[in-house]
Amino acid sequence: MIRDVPILSEHKIQSPEDAVAVLGEILCEVDREVVCAINLRADGTPINCNFVSIGALNECRLSPRELFKTSILSNAASLIVLHNHPSGALFPSRADCIMTDKLIQLGNMMEIPLLDHVIVGGDNREYFSFREKGVLENPHPSYCSDYRELSFSASKVAE
Image (tube, rainbow, N blue to C red; front, side, top):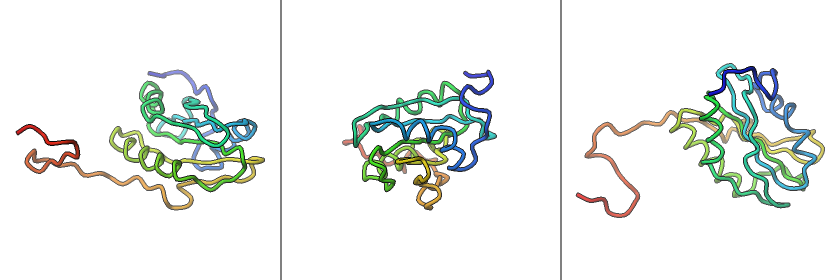
């Protein structure tokens, strides 16, 4: 668990602009896709930044396990994911949307909500924020309290 002062920045991150101000310039200079996770304290102060994956020119594979690993070890209250598009195109790909959906669901299950997924590119003047576009919502999941109502999507469960 992390108890030290923030290593990344003491600037609280409360908007996509704040996240881009902290890491956007670095990401815009990289010639391949890079995915970063900024782990946050409850007040929005960044604990650290984890460069989770470095990919190719137009794609980057991301394992949610690797992304949430530092969030758990850092005792993060929430996280923001940033990644770049070296082409400068800011529209999210199909893979970006699928991964964002997966991270929302997993973050809610682990009680480390994904606050935003921000895509930067070009000269760092523009960005795409899933939260600003209204497509990133953190619903409050409901869980089954009766074992007879549990439903598993895996193959047949032993009786």
